[in-house]
Amino acid sequence: MVSTLGTPPSVKSVSPNQSLQPLTSRVNSQGHLEIGGCDVVELVRQFGSPLYILDEWTLRQACRLYRDTWARCYPGQSQVLYATKAWNCLAICALALQEGLGLDVASGGELYTALQAGARGEELYLHGNAKSAEELAMALEVGCTLVADSLYELQQVAALVTPERPARLLVRVNPGIDVHTHEYIRTGQTDSKFGIGQWQLPEVFDFLAAHPQLHCVGLHAHIGSQIFDLQGHRDLAGVLAQIWRQGLDRGLPLQELNVGGGLGIRYVESDDPPSIPEWVEAVATAVRQSFTAAGLPLPKVLCEPGRSVIGPAAVTAYTLGGQKRIPPSEDLPEGRLYVTIDGGMSDNPRPITYGARYTALLANRPEAEATQRVTVAGKHCESGDVLLKDVLLPNPAPGDVLVVLATGAYNYSMASNYNRFPRPAAVLVNQGEVQLILRRETYADLIRQDILPERLQR
Ligand code: LLP
Image (cartoon, rainbow, N blue to C red; front, side, top):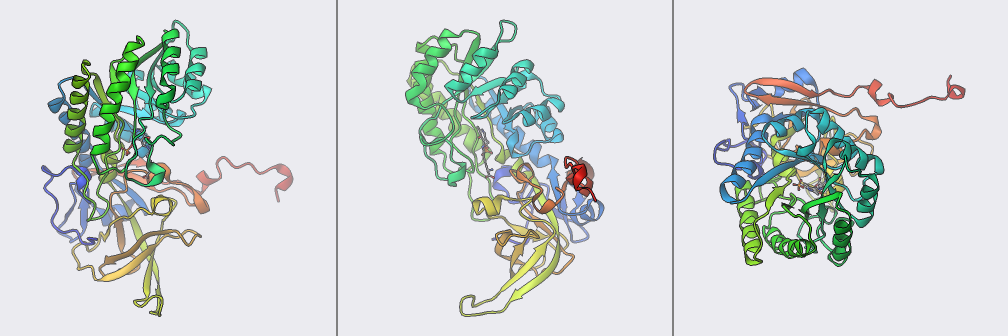
């Protein structure tokens, strides 16, 4: 695991998801880590810590690589959607839209945020295996495409549509494809809560054929997340071509094929994901070949990456606190040095949830030799609140600024107020400019929804 910064990657040739650091990372003349032209130590001084720091250039580069590779290597039409579940807030929705991406939203809350960021209905796709009637009505109202996950949902939608307000939808199928990733983030296997099983599709297609106000314009599938092997996506294209044929035979006006997201990113040196262009080329080729072999016209292809768009673009900066040394013993021959940070599982629940591993360095001396083996402990009242186990840092001391890399995806979006910690602020950095995009929560925010009944007041 690398703990010093090393040579910054060439910003032109690296696919963001293969880089441990944001693409603009470098060491400045102060000997500090700089991202987006901003000194990370200064950012912490100005905005406090923990602090999410988002590099605009890296984010835009990931969007462009997806968009431009599809345009270059797929002969039909294509559209990239950003899966906002990875990190949904106004500024990020607006950035993705500015790059020409549509938005995948997974709840009424994500849909609301996307709309507030200026998204139009035709740019939005709503997911969910258990959408509420309220969420469905909200989506229909604004002309958002529904990604229908069950016959029950289609029945609910049929009751809500009117001739003036028809539904535009994709059918989410369960392709029965199992991929190698953490059990909690696999979605395409037959035993999954997601997607309509192939055995039920004839009934669903008949229902759709009988309800023409439900405009079923395509199919959707998503096989999982943090995937490095391209084979699952190749297999998916073949399965979807067969189902497409069945849908056409039932008279459905299919045009859009949404192949989901799932491309993994590099969290630690040993991670070796395919690049964004390699992923797009593999999927585009597989769709072209499968549809051509089945004698089908090429569909418009949509994909919806989240992690590989936003993950590598952000880091989290913490201030180091006290330390605790466990002396060597028979069970622990080298002992252990715990260093504490001013955040933890409430701003990054991935280590405790999935055993996720990360890479870290010190922003105030990124080039110092990393010789000290440490375990980085969060400040929550929970033993499992450990962000990094056994990583090398250069003799960390209280007050040092620790930067955990590649925290853009599923960190802020899964952050909580556990132990009543206010959630961190987030800043957007670009060419030496810094912009606050999420205010740090205050203690007052924490009790904003609390009600103290009069009889309990003292
Ligand atoms: N489309 C659908 C229908 C999805 O369920 C997901 C992710 C995506 C797209 C985006 O996948 P991505 O490109 O980000 O892999 N909280 C977990 C990840 C959960 C993924 C949920 N679905 C984590 O922190 O690893």
